[in-house]
Length: 554
Image 1 (cartoon, one colour):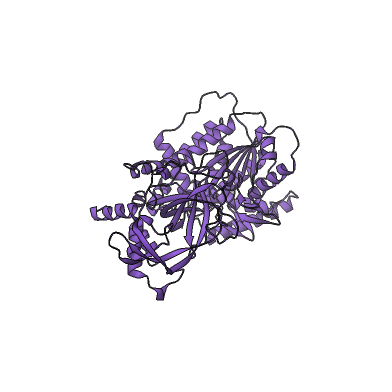
Image 2 (cartoon, rainbow, N blue to C red; image 1 turned 120 degrees about the vertical axis):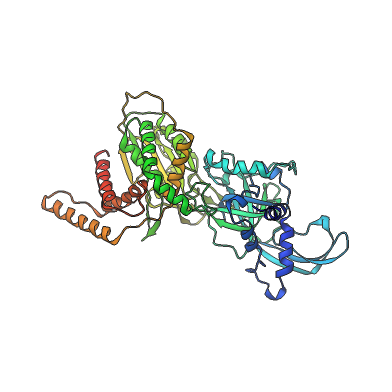
């Protein structure tokens, strides 16, 4: 970056309200005033921070940095939207103020701040005030982020925070019940935006660039009184959003600024896919004590995602159940460790009787929206350990939790419970279930494990370079554009018809439409795992053969 660009970036990070006021003075008039007119602010900041390198200059907001960053500095917050239904605010958009030290009257914009900065203001002119409507979102640090993925932000944060001193003694507060994993450390902030927002929904993962505000009490409900406070309400930091960009939830944090891989990332991954697949298969096969079929299914499970919906059905989901015949208490921990080292978001849940009967897996709302284990961003992998389930009876809460997990596994939908109804929201959560015998949860694919119990060698972790290759391989290929040519589609359709004719002639059970649909879904991830973005007949036949092996190991 040139020195002039660096200087502009540094000045904007330290004093974003100055840049906003300059744009306001140049571009805003009462004649063109509207809620959708941001007088060029979003475009200016998007242009200034148009690369990942520039974005990383902005300090990332978390529980540590919020205690060091000055109020009204520019911050970056990658987060999950936990609740979109906080109170709207009627807030001050602009006012005429008399400023120090020269006593000049000036029209000042307050849209991206808590209001007039009292240290610069002698007097306001109330009858010239213009009001604005703000929306608020309760946002939390992204649940389940793997340690390696956090390092990308932390490394940048340490550089951005050098030389800053503590700006207050108050530690940031959170509402534990509003985070999917309430006993896990996390950070929360209320993100405030104006009425021209993009469409934001619960569990969306977003990158916010905005101005750090003061800590305020969280208000729920329909009140428009932004001064309403409760003495026992936690005070959480606020961020006045300048830009709020949805990020693809499935990818490596080092991909493009929107979470999508660049063409160079994609080309490199496709070129190296065969070698990376071979190395990853060897690693997973060792972890599963020689069970190559189980290793391949775990690999395909990591690549699967919901890529579309048709007729109310999620396309691309691949929930997987690995069934043990003899209990191996280390298997679930091993799989969680491997997946956390490769995937960006992983969380393990022990499915004990107490967990099912006392915890909440689904969100529910009375005065405020409380979270549940399943309220996570798309692209999250949950490892469910059913081997921890003891004998006993599931109570009403346990049955509701089990239904919630089944809804995600079968339909990729999660019911949010409200006092008088429930609303289903679409999800994209990868479920890997380890059980002793069949799982309590219906899944897309289940096999009985066949480990070589004589293998006692410790698992050898691949080199750092290979692990990084695995991470890019999975993240990039998950997001690859995949096609099926008309020629291959016709050949597959003909094959399906011929199989049914042959089965009827031999008086055997013909392949069902559901089995055929599973083969098509399997063929997609088999192709991607090989670095093929268009289905070949070779990959189709490989998927059909794999489906038969799965059937033999149920």
